Length: 460
Image 1: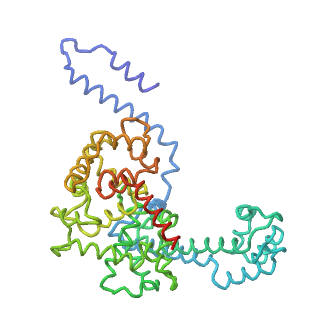
Image 2: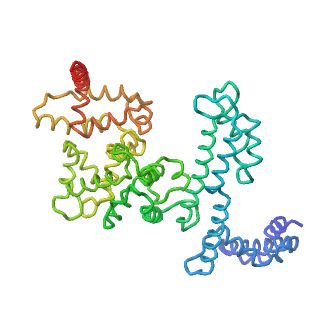
């Protein structure tokens, strides 16, 4: 009989002592006791069908823990086992990559099987010879000699061939990516596929001696250089400020290419100046920080930061910087300063716009409205009066901003609207920097002057 039916009949049975009435609480207690009794009997009757699971050895649970759960801090043996397992795995993966000798042999085979005619000085190879090279190149190269790879590199050649150099560069790039991934994984202490800030700091610190362009750096500056380099990775790749970055994201972005570009001993001066990771760039940023720090306490106050760049940022904007950003007793440290510099120097990038947008969104509503635009532009108008410039109507500026951005909602500008418009750098500059606003207002005159100067130079 079903336990629910038994319980129902038991409760429906008349009281054998009619003169003694049970309280409501007693009835509830009795109901619960009966429910527990019959439910236990019903549940117990089903346990016998799964007796087999009781025989599973305990070590299976431990094995599960080893694979899917990080060992606790006091489980030293398990931590060592995990570290050794990862090291062995990474070594095996490293051995699967092509070494220099194997790459040279691959180039020799490709050159030997090139398919005429050449296009200029560029050697080509057709699919038939491509497969022949794949058979002779060895097992490690097998993954590169597929129809998919060939089709990916096939462009407009009338003979249906691909460039040998393009294919070889493709292989080199793949090998480099795997080598770099293995190298980064060695610093992944948790073994979870991401690097914490301290992990990436260790990686870059140990990378410095292998970069000839950093040979001139004094060791006393290493910690500041590492901080400067790591900050760019985390500013752009960790927008939610989780304190960790996926190794895949590091490999996918161009920052690592820029960093490893410093291996080139012949790197031009222009390339060094535009490379955030170069010695001149790092020294420039740190030198600016020292120059702003007038009281030499290693921190920047709002007054000290106001001299940044052309010293024309509004006090309203600077107030928001110190309200929203991490400070210590109202002053900014070097790491927070780096975020500030990265945002202002890369205003076309989504991560930089997100940084500035958060400062402009004074009501924390997730959008900019007429009130917030007016709040910041009033400070621009005040600076214009101080510098004796003709006043500009906010209504005109507001209309221009909405025309530039073309938001989905005609009364609100979201972060995504700014990013989609490709005008985010212009809009933010207009609202926070008098010099930037003046440059925007006089853009036509400035272009005309540049054209006249160019014409004068041509005449001479």
